[in-house]
Length: 442
Image (cartoon, rainbow, N blue to C red; front, side, top):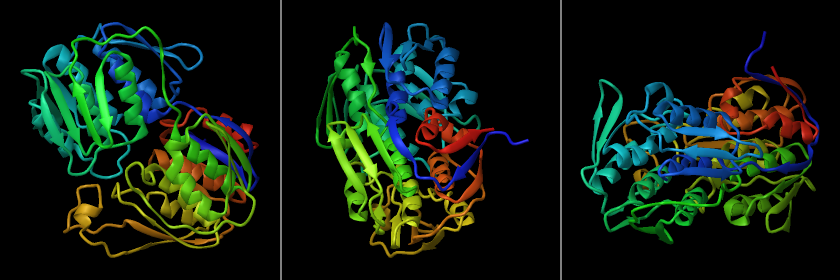
């Protein structure tokens, strides 16, 4: 008996409309930020996914309240939080647990949080997070025997920090730690992802004083946050690209909304080079459709406003259907190609290749070790008619990749361990069925 799997009958053009969900990478951080307000907070357009459920369980375990309402609304109330330690069970499941340093330190002055969980895409840049926290005056130590970080806040943060390489998670944590700062905090070379700006918008609408000028962020500390209206989370730009690729790879026609151009601009620019059909129907509505054979296009991943690392796996599937040879160069994580061998099972022509890089320690955004061997580049040859097979998902974005491949392939495929995919995609089966895809969860 199969469990935690999709059975997919592929080879059919997918057509129709997709109502995009709220962004996982924004919602999780904003839910945690909401616990810093001394009141009940309502959030809208929150995706109902497993990572949100796990986060709610964590908040409940700490003594706070978090629950779903109708129409993708949630209520968060951190006033009841009475514990300053995140249990290993909860902390190991989602890496955003590290963000609880902000609410717990302001509430208890001392906090204990385990090494963060989530997808194992390589060595997370936790060292940069810890260094940044210390630079703002916090004491942080790691206990290798327990696997916990202990942080202490003897006085409210102040000062400045400059990232040598921008870090999405570290930038968000520094913002959260600085909203109640003593005076002004400056973050230089900060990450520029749209989800960070959504967090800033939530805080500023709640009374914070945060200003971004390019990749520099200044925060003037305030003593209290409050809000009257619900906050609406931005749409998920990773989900948008996933369904755009799904439509094109299956030679279909998909309309997506709502999604702002600024959040998917790098993807659209590369997609235009393939010859794909693209129409922006209004400010937040896009049509992606197959109109002619696709051409191969090279990409390399980079922090925003570059080509997002989370788009890279689905781009590989699209390139199996494009004419020519494409190169995909992963610069953000050192273990983002778990899907390659699985795609080969379906007949994809993909090989790892080496490309010379000047000063790789600067070029790559992970902690590069010259003594290690890395596989950071793949070559994809297309077009290939994919056939059916049995696949296994290793991480969240690889999950969407393999599901797209199975929907593109001829015949019936089985995709195992789909719980990885469900951590980040809301109603995936339902949305695919609405596009005419043949898929069922078993």
